[in-house]
Length: 127
Image (cartoon, rainbow, N blue to C red; front, side, top):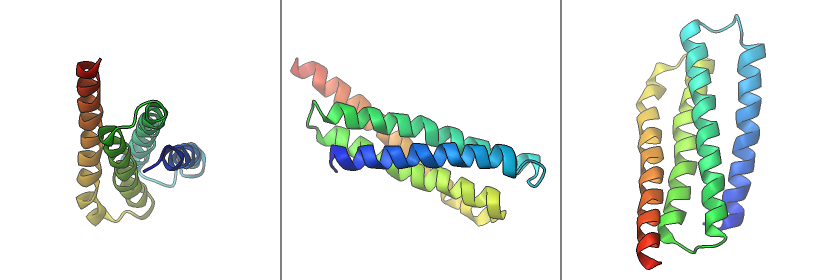
């Protein structure tokens, strides 16, 4: 994936995270159970964290061409979609079967961080 695609995805993801956070805090207060509000908050938090991670990867890719960095960016984007996306749908619909998808997003997040660490290690050896 290119830097441009990662930057575009990160900007859209940040926009969605702000929107979902505001929607959850204002429009859903009193409509969702405490548990589902916590699910919504978790989705927003993880989306923000990993949007910033994806943004960092995009910026690093401007200076270092790396398959590890690119893989990290793909993993972060995948995690945002699977983890946060499934939690948003769970919070808004109450469909608990989506809980089966959420761990795959978590694994994608872990993969992104692992690949980023591998890039850092491989980059240090090259200097």
